[in-house]
Length: 473
Image (cartoon, rainbow, N blue to C red; front, side, top):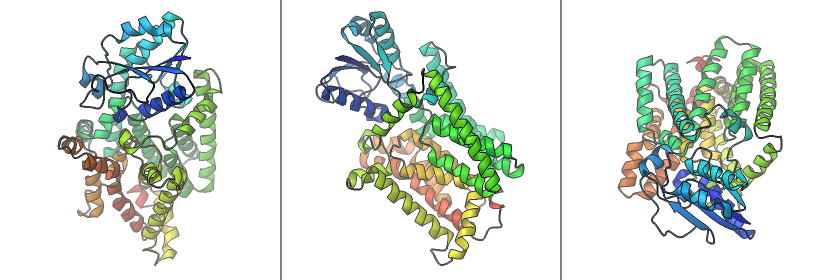
């Protein structure tokens, strides 16, 4: 079979995240099965560089046809791919393929290939890089690609600004300074720029987490079963939208159980179950059948541990698994999770000297929704097998929660500042411009670790805190 794979960025453009790794794997598997594969893509390599003409095809055996973007800056910075001569080539060549596979929803490359395939009477398919519920969410976008892309980028900026404003307001910042902080984040925080560049959804996830935190805080003051059910439903929907958030959902459920008791927990679980049914039905309706969910699940399992550090995957557990193959990705996840649990227990019990206080401390931790969500985000960075650079946009929540203006300049406060600095564009670009590639990788992989002192300090404070007061602080 002769296959055409259309994607705006392809190996070795690993700076653009998981789509590149997935596409390379699909091409390699198709070649191994005896198919002929042509990849139509652009010349983008990373934010600053193009792929040189004549670069060898990866994987070996594939035909890679690269088209030069009209504007490299527009392609790399805002996902606006305008490859010279691509549409003409696609219309002229689509008929010589038996099938066309599209690997990106929001690019002119995929749209051009789809239109050319329809005109030539060749079947085409979209590689699902998200859950069926994920795609159902974006049905309101315009059918016109250019308008949809522009609207999507506007929504990314609006979601991030709204999230930053919500987080700032929860810390007592007035609206005008909060808006100024939002502008500063969008100008200087590298994970946000990465999110916009690859057209991902971490901005929307951050806004959802900020809304969850706001709702949890309000529920503490006005508790009701309806609040509990709504929070459980929102947590479940967040996971089914993009399943890199299981720690977030568990944190919300644990908070409800600690703050509202068994009845609150049951209400949250009932809400979560209802949301699961609704999300599965919505995804199935959008993709014409329940088969979309097992198909997506089978694909997702193949992605476990995919992508190395040099390919853009910043996952600590995948790094450990590649260094110790006998451990495997699952073993690495269990090991890092166990180490995190031991550290939390040690902080809650004065390094094991006061185990009698540990239970009280852990209950207080669970009653604080900001602390719980911060722990969940840090655990995601520490344990999830896929952590692309734009995932670190979530770090804004624990940064906001951990920065205490009234506190002295201790290790916790300095760690929060160091985390933001490590993810900032001036630092990342400065290190890259200086040719310090290894240092740059270390900074972007481990900057989130600077949040750990603030979290462990909060666990220590919970040992002697009056029940329920820390959560409202």
